[in-house]
Length: 408
Image 1 (cartoon, helix red, strand yellow):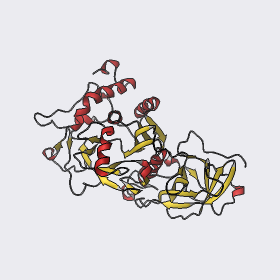
Image 2 (cartoon, helix red, strand yellow):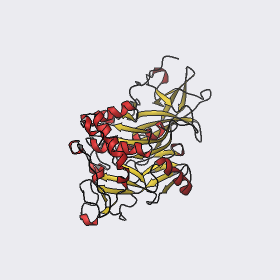
Image 3 (cartoon, rainbow, N blue to C red):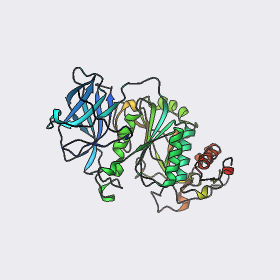
Image 4 (tube, one colour):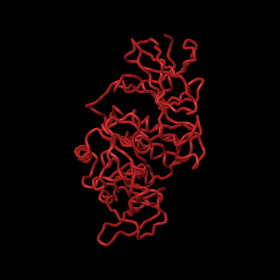
């Protein structure tokens, strides 16, 4: 067999074009559940119906199988959407190392396809590198340095071991922070270069922003992240950087998950109610309640101080079950989407807000509300004695604060 041309190793998500189609290949993973096969995560033009063909490298030989495109229904009416190309394993090829995808019309002997390395060769079910991984997709035009550091340090306090960030673009100040966390190993930064290949929308509907694919390609990024950490992490959370999942009766996710498994069952998808804390509102706490917190120097750091925004919008019927986020055992999931799952082994359960809820510090979703209609929630302040010094350490290390502030 002639030498295999591989996607550059430095490109974690290479967006390889399938000749003769508009399909772009992102990554490939061995599928061990139900039926052993190779799952290739891709982006496709939905108006096309290519007859995919998989070229599998196995023991220095090239094998061919007919690929099946399994399109994800969540596309929000954009022209492009996510597809899982399923490649059956032909006889004599039980452990392929690389895969390329072409079309049935292409002549394999004349092709010059670029091959993806197939990840997840081993199905780990006992020993994991991480207990908790958070998937963040996607970071674009990001400038909110203070909230970024606060969120990452809160995740660390909650027990998160790894945060994967699919990054399109950010400010130089943000990049400084990302470089710090990447160097320490807490963040895996995955360049998300989708805009080099198609025009991603800035909105979640075509009417909110022109483009080829929904919201910077958020759905294919989430699908890649889930499979990337499927056998590295016991649990995976799919959420955004302005969202925190805070337990109400315990202090960490490590203590929380046994409670969820006991109440709702194991290997489930746990869904958490969205609670919006408008970042434009900073009100004094009620008498006898803990007050909001601001450390010296934070006002000079670009971004939002989440400890200063402790009043939430009331939950209303129209938004009660919208914009929620989840924690899952990734091995029980086949296809995730922006909010929840499209296919899993055991389904999802709504988690009682008195057990855990999502704190979403963002622009108001009910801007017509008067300050007196907002509801105080000081749960975040119970972490402030650990959060503030941790944030100051990072801001000092990244030269946003002078060294003497670190101990405050």
